[in-house]
Image (cartoon, rainbow over all chains, first blue to last red; front, side, top):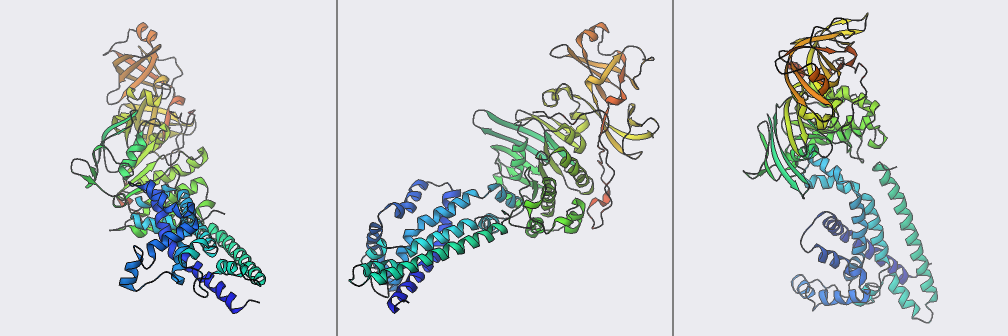
Length: 229
Length: 395
C-alpha cells in the first residue's frame, strides 16, 4: 500500500488539518458574530482584513506569515525570545498557515448560518430572563450548528489542500511540514515519483469523500434536532 | 399602577407621544389601528425599543426613566411577552420551552408548572417539537412559557392576529381564564373590537401615536372620539350589566344595568353573572312620546345631553339615562324634525336582536385566584349571540 514516508505525509496532513480547524473555530464563531450582529467603527476594514487571505495569492500569505512570525518577524522574534516558540520549519507553523488560509471560508460559512438565525427568538429568550451570554449559548449557538458544521468541513478541506502558504512559510521538510499536497509536489519532481503521486492522490480523494459523507450525515442529524425536518 | 408616559420620534413620519395609567390588575388593552403605535409601546415596556424620553413604571418597578437615567435591562424586567408569532425555540421540545423562563426566574415562584400546563391544556404536547404544533397550540405554549418565567406583567402583542377564527375561538377562553384566575396584570395589544370588549377591564385607545382616551372599557369605548378607530357602523355604547333572568321559551335574556334593563338574545351565562352589552348608535331610535305600537322590545327614557352634527347626513345624539349615556345615530333631518335639543326628555328604542352581548368581566377576581394545581373546569363563557358578524377589522 503506502510507504512509511507516504503514511507520514497522510498522518501529518490529518494532524495539521485537525488542529488548524480546532484552533480556528472559536475565533471564527466570534468574528462571524461580530460581522453579523455588531456595528462598530472600522467594521468594513475589519471585514476586509478577515477576507484578505482569500483574495491574496497563497504565496503572498505565506510570505507575510514569514515576515510576521519568522524568527526575525514582528511577532516571531518575541515568540522565540520570550517563549522559545519557533514556527518556521515546524508542524505548528504548517498548522498556522492552514488555519490562516481557511479562516475566511470558515467565517463565511458560520456567518451565513448566523444571519439565518431569527433574532426574534433571541429577543424572546431575553424577555424570559436570559442574559446576552446565556442567549448566545442556549439559543444562537445551537441554531447555528449547521453553519458551524459546514464551516468545520470547509476548514478541514481547505487545510488538507493547503500548499502555497505552507511551502513559503515553513518550507517542505519531510516528516515535519510535508503534508499530502507537498508530498505530491515533491513526487512529481522525482523521476520515479508517478506512483507515489497517484497513491497520494487516491488518498486525497478518499479523505475528501469520507469528509463529505460524514458531514452529510451530521447535517441531517442536526437538522432533525433543530426541528427543521 | 401601570404608568406609561413616553415619546419617540422616528424619522419625520412617526412621532409617538403616549401617556396613560392603568390599574396593575386585570387586562389593559391598547386599542387602535395598525400603525397607531400600540406595539411600539409594548416594545418599550419589554425593553426592545428605547423611548426618546419619559418614564415607564409597573407597580414599584421603574423600567425606564429618562430623567433619572434608568433603563432596566430586558432580562431583568420580568415581563412575560407573548408574541404574535409565538417564537417557540425550534431546537427544544415543548417542555424545555416551557421551562426556559422558569429555570431563569428569580425570587418566589407563585406560578407552578403543573398548574399552567393544566390551565392551558397542553399536557399532551410536552414531548412534541414546536414545528409539529398547530398555530393555536403554539400560542398556548408561548403563553405558558411566558407565565412560567414568573412575570410581574404579561405583555400580549396581538396574540390572536395570526390565527384563523376557529383557532381564535379556541384560545379566547384560555385568555379569559388567565385574566380571571391569576393576579397578573396583562397589557394586551389589539385592533379587534371584539377582543378588546371581551377581554379588557381597561382600555387605552390610540390614534396616530397618541393615547386619545384611557380608562374603564365601558366608558372609553363609548366615546364618540373613537369614531376613527371603531368606524361609523360599530361605534356605540358599552354597558356593563348583570344577567338578571333567562326566558328560554323566547330564547331571550334580561340584562340589568343601573339605569334599567335590556332584553337580548339568550346569553349562555348563569343568572347574576356580569355581562357586557354593546348598543351600536345606529341601532338606537328616538321617539318623543312613549312608544306603544312598535315591535321594538327595549324602550328606555332619558334626557338629550348633546347633539353633534357629523359628516354627511348624520347627527350623533347623546341621551343620558341617569348613570349611562347612550348614543343614537340619526339623520340631521330627523333631529331637526323632532326639534331635538339638550334637556329634552325622549324615549329610546333598541331592537333586542341588535344588542350584542359579550363576554363577562370579572373585575373582582376571586381571592384564591393564585393558581393551585387543581384547576376548576373552565368558567362558562358567553358565546357571541345576536346577528353580529365577526368584528370588523379597523384597518
